[in-house]
Length: 487
Image 1 (cartoon, rainbow, N blue to C red):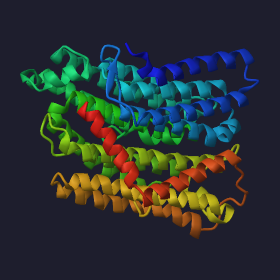
Image 2 (image 1 turned 120 degrees about the vertical axis):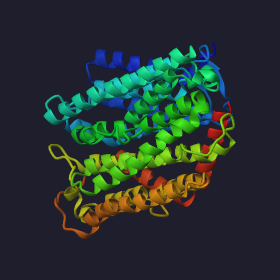
Image 3 (image 1 turned 60 degrees about the horizontal axis):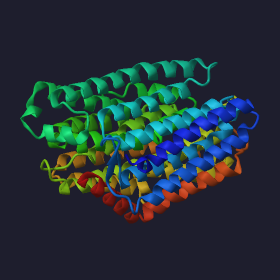
Image 4 (image 1 turned 135 degrees about the vertical axis):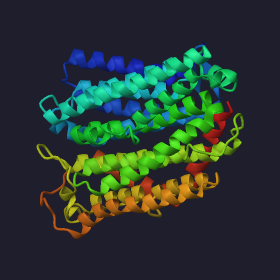
C-alpha cells in the first residue's frame, strides 16, 4: 500500500485531531492563534495538492479503494483554499454570534476530510464513508447556534432529509453490489458492460444512486431542503454547505457515474437531463418571487446545479471517453467557477452582517454603493458572473457547457438553457439595482477586517480575471478530466 498517495487525508486527520487536543487543553484561551494556524494549514494543504498536479499519475492504493490523480489533487486543493477563505471572511461573523469556538474549526476540518475522501473514493463503501463524514459535520455546523429556533429547525430538516438521501444512496449501492458482486468501480464497470447489467436489480440500483446524488446536489425534485436550510442556517454554515462540497459532489459524480457506471451512460444521462430541465425551470422561476436574499441564492443554486448537470450529458459510445472529455471538463470548469462566485457572495453577506443584525433580505442591500462602494463593486461582479454576463467568469462557464451540449446535437436543450439563463439574469440584476439605484436601508458604516477585505478583493479579481482569460483554467480542466477518465 502506498500511504504517500493519501498524504493529504492523513495530514488533515492528524492535524484535526491535534487541534482538538490543543483546544481542549488550553480551554479556548489561544483560540485566536489556533484559528490562524488552521487557516495557514488549509492554505498550505491546498497549495501542496495543487503543486502535485503537474506530475500526478493515475494511481490506486488500499486494494484499489482509493485513487489519486490530477483531478483529485486539483479539487482537493480548491476545496482546502475555499475552506480557508470561509474561515478568514467568516471569523468576525462567528465571533459576533458566539460561534467562534474550537468546535467550529474542528467540524470544518472534518467536513473537509469527508470531501477529500469523496473526491478520491474508488469504492462504493469509501464514497459512503466520505458522504457521511461530510454530512454529519455539516448537520452539527448548522445547529451550532443553540439559542436560535430557526437554526435548530434548519438543522433538523437538513438531518432528516440528508438521512433520506444517504439511505437512497446506500440502498442503490447495495443493489449494485448484489447485481455485480463488487464494490470497486472498475469491477462494476466490467459487470455493467455484460449481460448482468440488464437485471432489474442493477437498473433499480442505478436509479437510487442517481436520486441520492440529486439529493446531495439539491436539484429538482430533490431540492426541498435547500431553501429552508440556506435561510435558517447561520451564513457561515450556509457557505460551508454551498461552497466546497459542490466540488466533492462533482468528483463523486465522475467516480460513480463515469468510472463505475459508464457502460450505462445512456440511461443515467437521460435521468440527468430530466433533473437538469426541471431544476432550470423551477430554480429560476421561483427565485424571481423571493424577497429574502439567502432564499433567492438557494433557488439560484438549484438552477446553477441544473446547468452543471447539462455538462455531464454527452453523445458517447460505451467504452470510448474521447467524445465526453469536453463535456465533463466544462462541468468541472462550471463547478470550480460557481464555488468561487458563491464564496464571494456569502462573504459579502457575512461582512455586512453585524452583531444582532443579519443581512438576509434583498432590501438590506439597498444603497450599498453609498455605504461601501468597494463592497458594492465586488457584489456587482459576483451577480454579473452568476447571471452569465461577460466578461465575468460565469459567462465563460455557461458558454463552455452550452458548446459541449450543442456538440451533442441537442439544440432544443441548448435553447432551453439559454432562455432560462435570461430569466435568471433578472433576479441577479435586481440586486445590482437595489445596491446602486435605491436609498440605503441602513446608514451605518461597514466595518471589516483587513484580511476579509483582501480575501474579497482577490475573489473579485479572480471572477473578472478568469472571465477575461478563461482558456488556461479550461485547458487545465480538460487535461485533468482526460487523465481521470482514461485511467
